Length: 160
Image 1 (cartoon, rainbow, N blue to C red):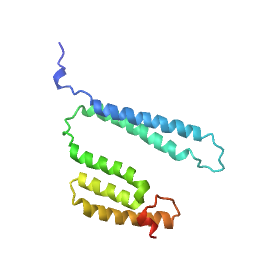
Image 2: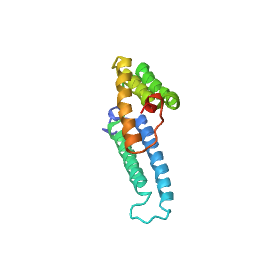
Image 3: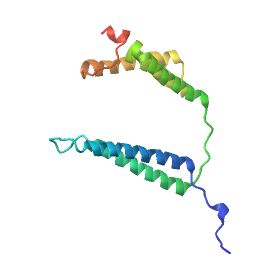
Image 4: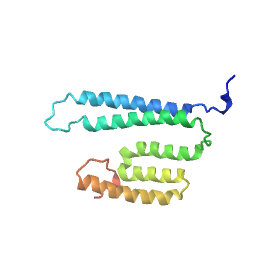
């Protein structure tokens, strides 16, 4: 008979295994793409595959660390998900995607800012929408006018 008590042994966390699996798949995809980029003729010591390779290695290390954590810490009890805040953030993302071609970067991203703030329990929505739109317009000016990068322009951006 063994002194080892099986009831005190922790079971591995299946959710962490799923996350580790996703990280490993992402690392493999990025690593494979980086490997394909390494065959491109470049005239520099740092080619187009350098940063994707670093990212792939980092994701692989995170995957291994997540597996180790799943085994050592075991399953943990998690709080229940709240649907309301997640719905606000999702509404912000969907709204930005829909509004971007019609109302431009500033207004669409202002909506995303306001909906995300509401999802985190901050309000009022209209106040965060105005603050987000002003901040995003400043970001638009920096990127579009200062750096000459193309962002979707709407009625607000066309004024300048």
